[in-house]
Length: 244
Image (cartoon, rainbow, N blue to C red; front, side, top):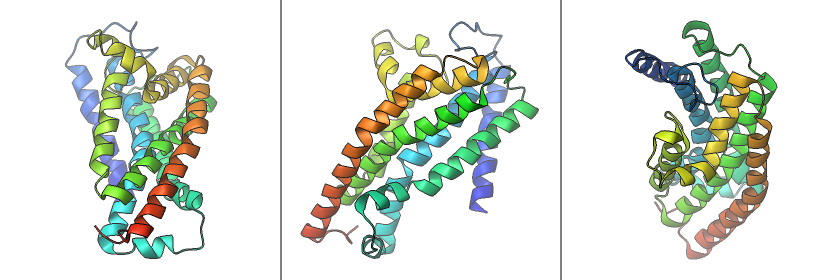
């Protein structure tokens, strides 16, 4: 039931932006990265945000939930390496997020007019997978923060909202104030949004964004896992692992 309700909520979210797009006159497409309309542009932002949220906030939420239910100690007593725990906690949310992403894309294309006539589905799949890998490092760091200060989930949510805001989740970066645009051009979420838009609407040009996301994951994931390992060690040494 939870999975079904999440799918329904995602479709409702798409409908909100679909009807918002209908109250505006046709906007110029030069800033929409190949999207035929504002709805197409925003729909990709919503779809990518599903994957970003699942891989970057789910681990922190799961650790927090385990703290509140008193099962965190039992979880970390299992015969698993720290990297297995850290990445394993985001595994199911990531797989479900991929299913949701393609489900929403299908709904938007079939019933809401999303233009995917030139789509590269290989590119779209790789863009989403690279996005999940890159954002997983933020999720592991968020889990480490929760282990140490118990309430890092709110900080993660605020950080992701800010990253999406400046990197073109539901409006082009070009409408931002000039001093914010350089920030939006370099945050990793920008490569995620642009990569999927190029894959779906142009069928090409997505390779650079996917490579950038993959490199970000290769560099940051080992660091994030190391930080998670230190946070877990500190929690055990200080006796605060079960505290909430």
